[in-house]
Image 1 (tube, rainbow, N blue to C red):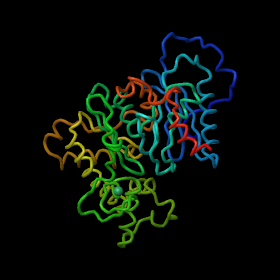
Image 2 (cartoon, helix red, strand yellow):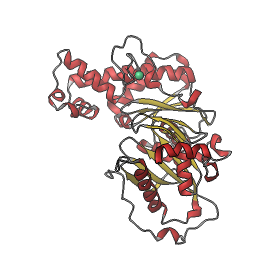
Image 3 (spheres, rainbow, N blue to C red):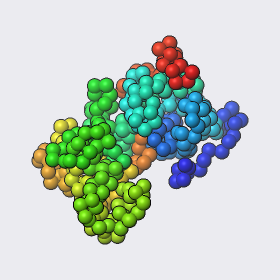
Image 4 (tube, rainbow, N blue to C red):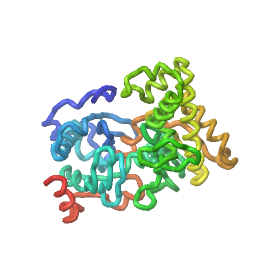
Length: 364
Ligand SMILES: [Zn+2]
């Protein structure tokens, strides 16, 4: 799980008690935790948005949540150990699901199957630090707003194009969650005329065609209609977005066509977002945003081709600058968000009876 993520954290249990030569009176380092469906990345981030040290663990290493949390705490301890502990700001966590940032409670994560988990309070009690929790798309837009393609702007939308599609929203320098903190679920915007079935069960959602999984659906529909492609000869599990982009780069017309269709879906959704919110910047992020030539550039062109003139004139549509680190970097500096500045989402003192009872359901 550590491939491509830099060196693992070496075990050094005594180090946390040693003074660091670079001790400063005021905190200067952020602690970010980016929880993904297949890995959890932890990182120490400086005030320029650079990740100084990182570690990654498998969220499903153990069958029980309690054991996985213990593993997370152990990894965090080792990550922070070489530093003077006074140097750290609060802990920030990005979650792939719906979160109530005011309580640090994770309402729902489809991939990890967490319901009403008071993660902020649990982590605050175990670390003795203040903990802020937010949806990963919120963490990503916050990272790009502070240190990336949205730096210096006030209104920023960051769309994460990966296996699904969603966006984080900053309006006038504040993270926007909307009713029940579910703003930005643009993957489920209805696109008239689409017949593909979405993961949510409905037909016609943008992400049913405009996402990594959507691209595979578009491709398979073409093959079912008689198109011939080398990707169709791969085992089903390997007929994924990566294989389709690879074949497209080699000139496969069916894959090129599927990507073009995907771009069309994405453009419909993102044009609507840009028109409604008129952000200073609409940032294209997520794993698939690495595909500049085949995805990002045609997508920007397509959005501009179908959008109202005010969008074309006023909204910068640009690729992300922080890449896959955006949620990690944004999480590490959540304490700078106005909604978290007045007090912790979860501090040790907020470990209330309610949170204890909720945690009891999880931790026994
Ligand atoms: Zn849907």
